[in-house]
Image 1 (cartoon, rainbow, N blue to C red):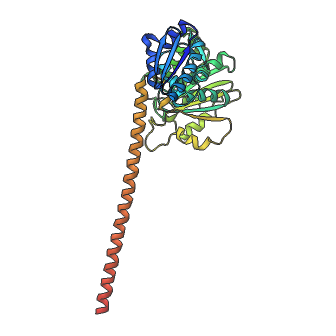
Image 2: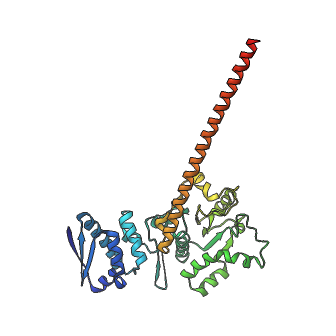
Image 3: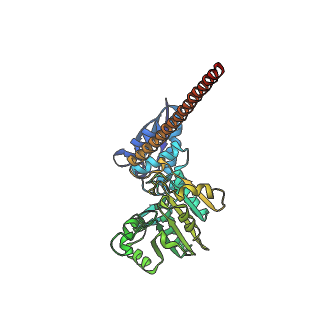
Length: 356
């Protein structure tokens, strides 16, 4: 049994580390496999030597985050421990990257892949974020767009997604074009309202400096000096994806987000987001970042749901492959029996002919 003491700088630091009703300490004990006891400004770690050493390193990283003044919550502590324990990364480097701040609320990456995604957007002209729901693909891209716009790096923001379906058949819905498509863009508006005051956002939309439009409206345009986000890209066809990517103009940056497990296209059509990895993988200045269940930053149950569906899909695919293999084997066996019978019949006919 090993024992280590970490001396905290103040009581306020101890309170931030412990959380309300020691919620953070309970998470840390569970994730770090050692006993934690907080006495004043001393945190005592007890457990197996290897576990204590690992816990000390993880808690020191967590304290770096606390000392930056960023607020902690149980969900954030869970995410930071995922980085420290599962990914063997440095939580302070990930959580210390603040993309945008609005009304005291800081937006930035919470997982290793989210940090890679944000860095890729900064570095590359076109970035693809592919992964399940709740991984922050669209939200972080929107934050990066808002930061670039108010930092005078671009002159406008353009947010787009396939409307209703891949064919973008809006004619059967009642109302004006705006009334038809607004419900499908609500997630994008929600993200914008989280980052810009409502009156200012309305003014920017009115002036055309922030544009939210269906993908079909991108055709024939050249988008210069813009930060462009294509959301729900799994519902584009390869032709639509090519059309969108070739709208790129000078001084612009593109981010394409989507989840290839939630394709709403007819079964006979291929998703442009599925093929893009094969087509553009070797092209310079394009980054592709993939997320998984560990990057889900919504309720922890959402992460478990995503992982359960992935495991089910993998099991289903294995069963289908096994069934297909068995079917092929049966067909081969049947062919062999038929050939055997045919050979026997031919031999019998030859014997009859020889006898006559």
